[in-house]
Length: 333
Image 1: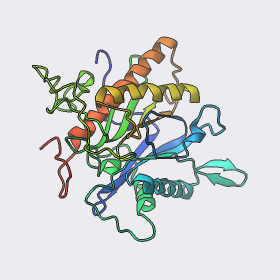
Image 2: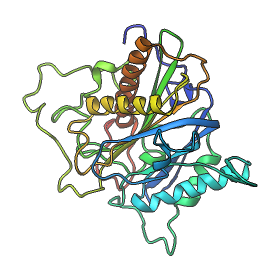
Image 3: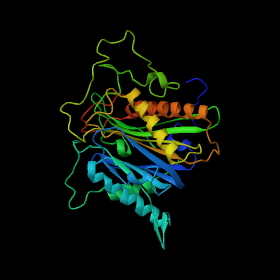
């Protein structure tokens, strides 16, 4: 990747001021990932899938009033998983965090969900699903280090041929700015090429972070065939993620960063952004570097956002681990 280097952790938390925590329910085979901001942080979102599931995303539009968020949530559980944001909100309220409205503090916690209800897990949970408590637990567990693969929002995720999962990657640019991605991959399309184990994201790999396989040679005859899950159901497939930077960006420029990160999603999954995916990318800009990108630096930042997203997607699949009751094999097996 030329002069770009991985951050020290190769995680979203290489962007200072961000902490990530995971929680999952083993019986449910589902989970939650919370991204907690140390201070209110500029945020935006861009949706390109035809079947999204979200909470509090309208406020992220550049023309709307709220300028920053306190946390973001990625969750399994389909629409039930949107409850996870309430748990994260409760955690932040206990810490005195939130948008000031008169005497009140209202934590701002947008969320996105993926559909993993087809997992073999227990879904007879009574009146209320467990995602609120999982959200609180994920926020309470947040820190600089967190596990990838079959963890958090990636616990019950699958792709056409392999288990999905939670992935992350980072890069440090020539001007010192850091850009990083975090993603939960439950895509309709495939992150691997044809019937093999090579990743579409191979050109963006730094070192051997997802196996160092490169592209297959000879190129397989079935590479261009769209490998997808059988019998697609609207809302049942999603890649949801976050791209973050310590560059100084306002909401419109953060929105453009989210748009650019979708290019990485499309480079890492074939096909992507289908009618049956809820593909969504949040963007966060902490401003911690103090660098306001020049026009040329903005182009590099956008390219890096796409690259770290592609790498994070491949790392999600590469890091998944086998568990009892799996619907798909882990890539490592």
